[in-house]
Image (cartoon, rainbow, N blue to C red; front, side):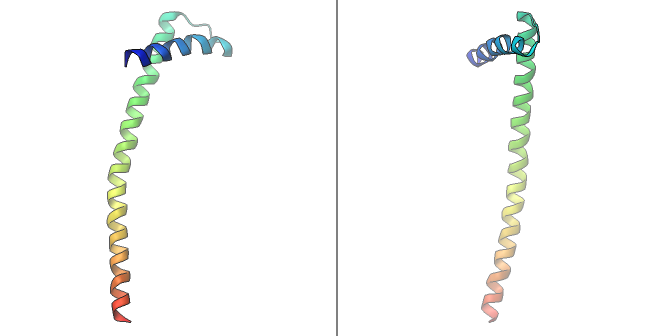
Length: 75
């Protein structure tokens, strides 16, 4: 994790001046930490969203498919 953070940190330090931002090394590190925390939180929320909604979708499909099976038996 430290290696990834260091790479991102150096990436920010190299890329931001290309867009007109003059950042110090400490500021670049702080920006990297902020983006890393946001990324971890976003990954967690997306994972939880799909864990909940895929279970609901699977249950809905099961109900729908079960209904079709019952109709097929009637005909």
